Image (cartoon, rainbow, N blue to C red; front, side, top):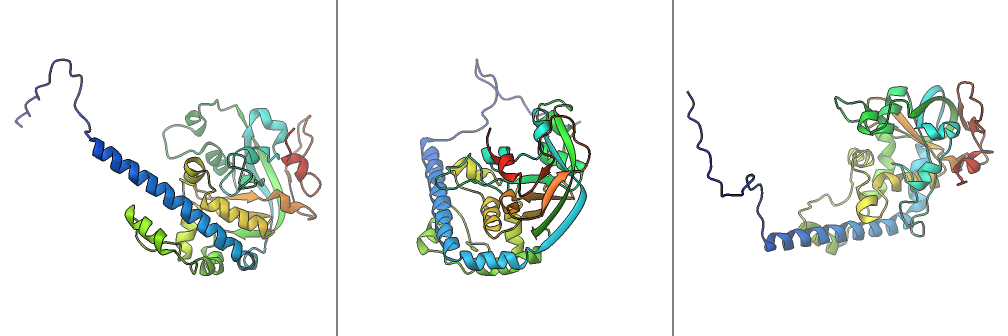
Amino acid sequence: MKKLRPTPNLRRGTVGFLLDEFSQKDLRAWQKFSDNLEKYTLLLFYHLEGLREVHSEELSNALQDYGNLKKFEKAWFRLVNFKHSNEFLSTRGSLIKGGRFNIGGDLDSRRFPGFPALYIASDYNTAYSEYFSNPQSIFEGHELALVTPHSFTAVKLSFNLKNIFDLSKVSNLDAFTKIISKFPMPEDLKRLGRSIGLKPPWLVNNTNLLRKSLLASNWRDNPVQYEIPSNPQVFGRLLRNAGMEGVIYPSTKGKRKCMAVFTENLDGSDSFVELADEAPPGVSHTILNSDSWKELSSSK
């Protein structure tokens, strides 16, 4: 029979074991690391912002060369909160809080002007998982989000769009990556990076790394912690500025695809996204197109 470990002697009044112990020196070291990490993140972002501006035409051309996909589909899906059931094509929510590929009002609009996007998915299950950010779990997505199964509406959509950038094909990033991989990295930033334990490569230098950063699950960290756009939001801004009507990308919650539609670029176009089934009474817009995108993105 296995010998039992003796029970430790606990002082009177002790209610548990000591889980961790740290000193003032540890606290100062952690604070210094946190300050240096924030400094590095912000300096790197604004350094790259300047370079992206200088090379804006090159970057735009690189995206346009691979952003000529045209697509017509009859059965994609979108989920909306039940109270917005009559506004299922509205993009106002994306302007309040930015999505993966668009910038919203949760960032300073003077530094980072917002732009709308409509997010849709290639099937119901993907739309559901993306809407509730449902990880692998024994619970349903709506249970994790603390809402009832009946508090959202799913709508089936059809669309006809052009100038779509397909992020599911890694090779579509080749020309773009070639440009940004040549961006210089200042020595002072490298030193600062080493001080927080970072190692080369300092910048993205291949398409796989770039796509991984665009599909990262922690993409909200930069907007929340440092009040700057995330990598996919910057990429979405570049696509929107290059005239793309949308970006198709692999769902991070399943095996199918999602798309962000840059509705501003429907202006003057014959492209559209519309309800695939008959609309209920009270729905004022059943189609998102050149005539309706402004109203569907404006606040009431």
